[in-house]
Length: 195
Image 1 (cartoon, helix red, strand yellow):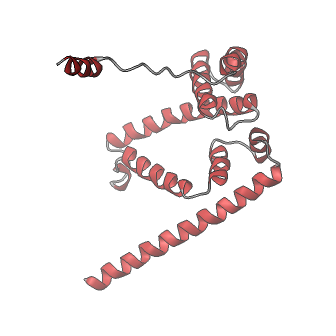
Image 2: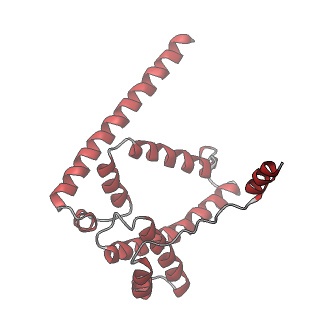
Image 3: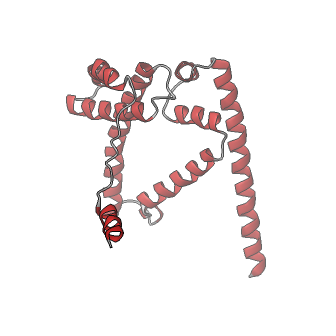
């Protein structure tokens, strides 16, 4: 009976709390460069609030990719500008959605924009996930708006190696798209024949 009590007590004990801590050096990086990144966003035309929001997102991206980035300041500057531009264009997307909701445009234009965007994003992610790891990293930086030389500095590779990875990734992606289109055409032909 005492053994049973021991088991019961063991199952009632709360689990140990796991705390996520930032990698070594991130806190110092955050303190030293947050204001600089805000100034970068404001120089690009952001208000103080927009700059702060873009900088918060940029810092989150730097934290997420901490081990993959060589030049974190350059990455942070590029990310803060990218986040500011995305935030500005996101406002335009909301305006377009409201116009469509109010009947502006054609029936085709009234599709569920969020669903279409999600479908497109999933399709692109699927294509990118089919790439080898190094090519995927390089393509992710390209999508974020970095140049080949900036990517090379961040990854600690030569610009030529980055360009070669981009070339190979583009070839793979073009072939994957070509194969997908061929499969869609075959499926369409089979449906016509079945009728």
